Image 1 (cartoon, rainbow, N blue to C red):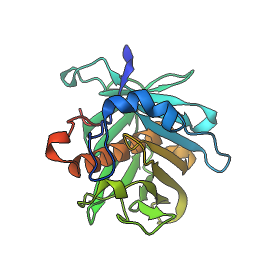
Image 2 (image 1 turned 90 degrees about the horizontal axis):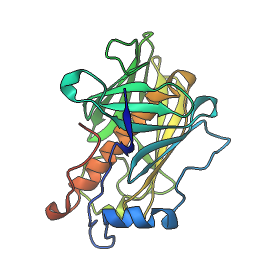
Image 3 (image 1 turned 180 degrees about the horizontal axis):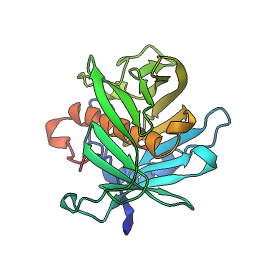
Image 4 (image 1 turned 180 degrees about the vertical axis):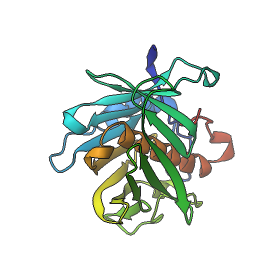
Length: 245
């Protein structure tokens, strides 16, 4: 199945974020490289890194030191094929089926009958996103809410409350836990105070999740951040793009 390498999950940002930041999608395209690093540098303390850009989501580091991208599949929902493709550098692609903004299905290949790798479900506690991982072998993992670290600024969690988007940039982190509630890793997102509010993801991700499952989880979180940005923008500045098909 062919994929379009120039298309991906598109995480658009509004053209205004309250009193202090003016966002323009065109400016993201032009200025992204000059405002911040175009990739998340490798970090020996973590084993999963990714970043968002105007083109979509790129995984810079994952298991076995590989990288990957998530691109839109050249299929239609009625065809039964994946909505998106997890394309590994130097490896076979996996299929991602975006049932809705809160449900992602991952299969080993692009065939709808291919063995299931797992599913990621998003839910919300007090308006703040948290994730549940259901693996094909029966194992389950989950996260808590993403809490702000390194400062006490508002908002304290990644949630859908109304606030000035100038207050959003910072680092938010959650613990990854197994079915028994034991901490087995963590995942964080750094929202940068630049045009487009670009995001950088890092994590200590256990092996069963470190690949298309972790990438799918990041895609869901990135879509949630897009929704937060869109919700807090002025109505005339909202851009109806995002993760869901």
